Image 1 (tube, rainbow, N blue to C red):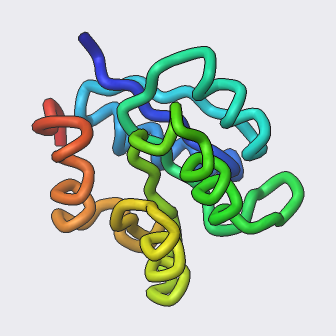
Image 2: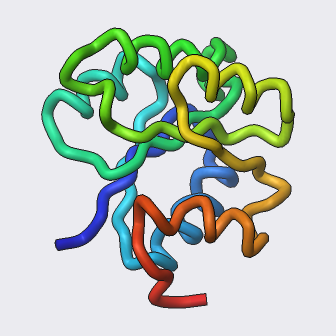
Length: 127
């Protein structure tokens, strides 16, 4: 069964790049614009990983709000969520709120990013 990733709050070019990366693991990607839409999608379908932008593209709210929303929901607390941000302090904040270690857009092609994704998506099927 294919792994599923929910991508939240990315602009079109960043979503395309993230989709390419996730699909290299043989996983599929669903996309929503806002945390409220992500919560609805997470209630309706099962995801192996959530990727949330540090600043939501559509309204520029903070992506860690989705981390908080998921952590406060008994049903969703166990779903891994990663912040997509190059900023170390943003990553620290997200992890302190319950996110798993994420990565920045500057590191999409780094082996360290593939290593971060592997526990959730398995081995890459394409490079």
